Every structure is written in C-alpha cells, then in structure tokens.
Image (cartoon, rainbow, N blue to C red):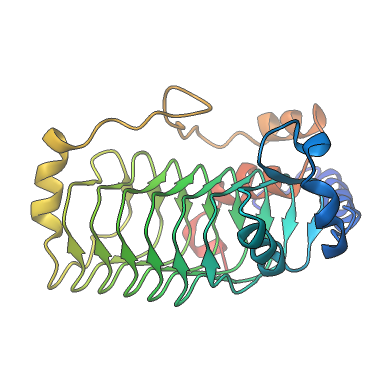
Length: 281
C-alpha cells in the first residue's frame, strides 16, 4: 500500500511487519472446539456462542453449527477468511474483526439479525439476491473493495452508519421494505441504485458522497424526502457524535502509533484514509 509519509518510513514498516506477524499468530479456530463452547459453564447461563481472538478459516461451518444448536453467534477480534454464508437462523454479531478475503452472502436466506461493528473488509462483500428477514446493521465498518447489494431483499431496517466505502457501492434492483440509514458514512466512489425500491425512508442527509448517486428507475428521491419525519436518529454505541475528519498530521499519526500496539485496523484507518484519490491504487 503506498504511503504519504516520507519521514520515519522505517518505523511504519516495522510496525506494519509486526502487525502482520501478530495477525498470523492468532491461534486458528478448530471446528472441533465448538462442542466445548456451548455448555452452561462456558456461557454463564447465556445461550450465546462466543469466539474471540482467533483466526477463523471457515465461518460457514461455525454458522452451520450455531444454526443447528440454536445459539446466537458472537465473533470478537478475529481474523476471518472469506466464505460463502448461505443461511442464518440465529443472530450473528461480529465486532472488531477483519475479513481478509471476499465474503459472500449471495443467494442466502437470513432469518435473524446480522450485526457487524468496527469490522474491516479487505476484499469485496457480495449480498446479491440474498434475503434478509430481520435487521441488518453495519456500524463503523471499513470497506476497501466493492459492496454489491444487487437484487437483495431486506425486509426490516438496514443501516450502514459511520462506515467508509473506498470503492463502488451498488444497490441496483434491491428492495428495502424497512428504513435505510447511512448516517455519517463516507462514499469515495460511485453509488448506484438503478431500479431499486425503497418502501420506507432513506437517510443520506449526513453522509458524504464524492460523486452523485446514479438512481435511474428508483424512488430514491421520494424516500429521502420522507426521512426527516419517519426515521429516528440512530444511537451510536461507541460515541455520541460521528467521526470528524481532521487534517492530516504525520507527527500526530506517528505519536498515536508509538503509544499503542498498532493493528492492521489502525494502519488502514489511520493512514489509508488520508491518501489522495490517485494514490489509492
């Protein structure tokens, strides 16, 4: 990844190398461990399956197990390989994690809540033709590659709040039966919703769009007009106000890096977002 800093590059490279090593050293999760995680002594009486600080090579197998035993799945601080997620009958919560490969929800049916926060997608994410019967929430996530919701059906509320989208975001031919919220999100590339249907309010009022939305054949304009009266302000879990972009200060960024153990997320969020558009290749 190109860097804008010329001074102290050796410090950044050293941190970057350590981050990659730390990520690779997260112990790999073995599917055989699942049976040990569901007992009352492990969950404290809560019917919840928690996996933390692991490398997950096959998320689909874990989700299949959670569906079978009927226990909500929580993933925290994990490195997740790309996967095809075809079905979820239990709530899924993913927090402070990184998807290193493309993740596919394509053509899947999801009957429970899907919630991701502080999670980064280094490759694409594909929701095409999937059906979501409950709320979908993406909060404070970073998407480095294309997000494709083409033809998907969302039967309840959908939110992409405080998110950053570096490449294209497509909602072509998607249907949103519930409200759609983009509070404080930033889109640095094209957004399309050709022939999309929005049955309730769409909140784009505080989003940052670097290009105009291509909305041919959709009712986006009417849905935006409805948002002021129909949509409740989102409740931010980690901070009461949205992220404010500061001017780039290399010394501040280096100082921040020196005061804490830097992770891949810190490097991506702290440096990548300040690059000019022509340097993000």
